[in-house]
Image 1 (cartoon, rainbow, N blue to C red):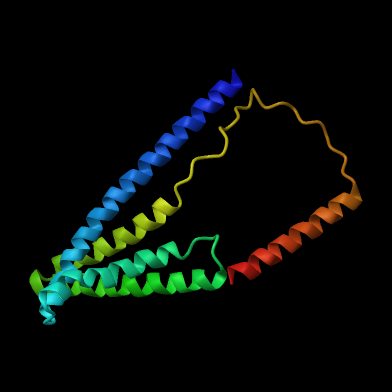
Image 2 (tube, one colour):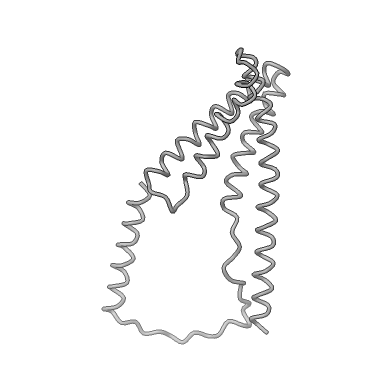
Length: 176
């Protein structure tokens, strides 16, 4: 009985996580569309030919998206650092273009909307990357078996502490 409840809870958590990811992607595409129109407007305003103005957003927003892809934990520390730089560069350029387009066409309200769009895209990227279902269903107090007191072996406990310290040091070195 307990395993069936656990399986149902895991299936529900996965459905919710999948729904969140799909919703985040749809909302992210909308913000990219709005950002694209603002960046294209700036391209025309600075005198770019039609083709260059219409594709300028690729050089601005996609730098941030590609940078986000490079920040994966499975990649090397140098690659993640390059990814963070790309994200920052793309987001700053996008913010400048979106706010400038708003100021040129509609004043402070439109500029605020442009800044909001960039902030929303940043938050959506963060949220979608961090949506993960729980690995197990929570146990209720009535189903948790009582654990007997454990006697620990001092030699094994010391080895476990040293191993933990080594893994933590390696993880810190990889993060830099």
